[in-house]
Amino acid sequence: MDAGAPAGLRSGHSSAGGARAQASQDSDLTKPVIYWTPIIAPGNLTFYNGAMFPEWRGSALMSGMATRTLNRITFDGKGGAKPAERWDVGHRIRDVEVGPDARCG
Image (cartoon, rainbow, N blue to C red):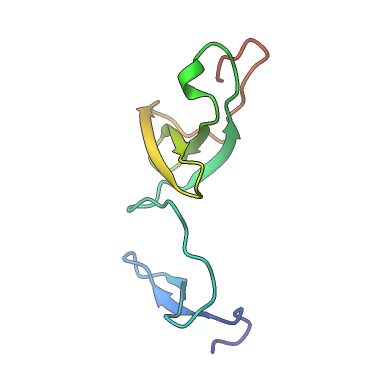
């Protein structure tokens, strides 16, 4: 085990050559239900429950700082999630909010 690493984690290496933690095969850590390769570098996440886009209710809106995108994520009610839409906004977004009029900004 690596010094200072939580039980079940071991050192690995990213494709860029930097170190990263990886769960070992016998780990009791839960694997993520959604991830992106390459990483989108999430900046913020909020849930949408507005009236303007009823089909979005219950979706998450998440900024992708590395990809310069706004991403909508849907949930299946059974613990699963999947990317639904991605919009290229051309710049990094650090914060995503839903306004009182249910518009995103």
